[in-house]
Length: 126
Image 1 (cartoon, rainbow, N blue to C red):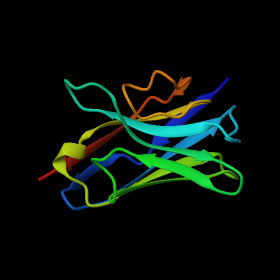
Image 2 (cartoon, one colour):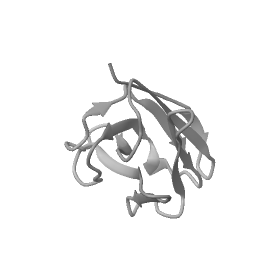
Image 3 (cartoon, rainbow, N blue to C red):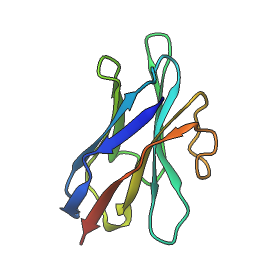
């Protein structure tokens, strides 16, 4: 049984940083895709970042709104994916979800992903 458990959310002031973690059990990264999505109240879920391991390299992708501020990474030994979030803005406030699947993609609400975590709340105050 695949489980994805997010942690690391919280409340910070604008300009602050948080690091989210997603621990996966019953699932191996291999060349599969891991991603972070977020959903703010009243808005559709949107892709934030994705990562896939290739032959000696990692392929990453970011939403335009977080490029240069967020960094996705993964620790294969710990079966954990991270999202380092710097220079946070109030508009980053949302529930953040970890997702896993064979295919990668940040468009839409993430229909290509097979597994989802329960989410961790991030609140950024101005």
